Amino acid sequence: MPCVRPCARVFYPSRISPVYQQFMTDIAVIGGGIAGLSAAIYACRAGRSVVIFEGNMFGGQIVYAGRVENYPGIVSIMGPELADDLRNQAFALGAHSESRHVTGIEVHRDRKIVICGDAEHEFRSIIICTGTESRKLGLKNEELLTGRGVSYCAHCDGSFFKGKTVVIAGGGNTALDDGVYLKELCAKVYIVHRRSEFRGNPVTVKRLERTPNVEFILESEITALLGESELQGVTVRNKKTGATKNIACRGLFVAVGRVPKNNIFLPYVRLDGNGYIETDDEMRTATDGIFAAGDCRRKKLRQLVTAASDGAVAATKALEYLEADLKSAVYS
Ligand code: NAP
Image (cartoon, rainbow, N blue to C red; front, side, top):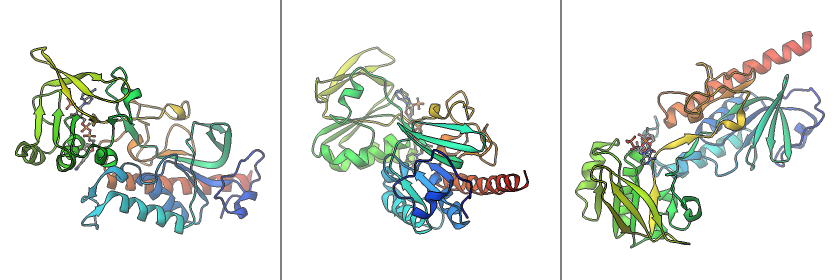
């Protein structure tokens, strides 16, 4: 049951059922990826009121994942389909959603405030599941040319470059998978990687090596983006020789990893040196009643299955926190 404690300055999200408008909602889940949706499913099944804040698309990274074949019990599923199933499951169990970007949080003893610009929402506990965002190359005009040739998602934007020459930056599995996807669509695909060997799956590397329209440019980095209002090409510098060359291309797919975006939760969480939220094994952060789950927290393996597991643990611990909180309110 939702908490019966009245709250003074609550702003209620549009999809919240009127019955909750008299009460403080139990749990805010910030982020609608697999960790957040899993947390919502667990909390809703336990009868708690949950609002999921998601500023973009539900599903997080899996929406862009192409085919998923490493989720136990599901032999093969397209990422967006898995995202849809999870979202539908959470909503069917009673989760509500708020399509807004969270800009900060505040804690006033047992009240947890989620801030979205000028709106404030009040909860009894928070589960942070904000994942990570694409790392940028840090080049001049990168932001300006984003959406004008520069992209961070081959599966989303690849079809805009049918029959054209494109460049992929990166040497991990994302860059390689992007290569596999784009080689079918594009006339020519260059993969520029700063080392002599790829970090990603060797089987995929071999497969791409044998593909006539794919060319690896190793030990090299992209040093400039060419074009004023649309991408026209990139400058590539060989790190060993220092030689530079321009490659004419209409698309650049940046696949150089991901970074967390957790500063908005300071000072209520502690971050490690890379910006990930420090939690214990039970997803507790530095503040009582605030939990973190999924890729946003410090952990060794960032996979769908570990994100789902984190979400379940965080929700279970949040439920325990809510029980304890209610008891202390009753007996105080
Ligand atoms: P990643 O494994 O961290 O690889 C990032 C790549 O970008 C690395 O090759 C790195 O180079 C390079 N890089 C980083 N910063 C750079 C910069 N400023 N300029 C140029 N290059 C830069 O990231 P990811 O490929 O996105 O993969 C993330 C995780 O998801 C990994 O665990 C991956 O295995 C997993 N994943 C799995 C699949 C799959 O199973 N099919 C698909 C996608 C992702 P260095 O090698 O020099 O560090």
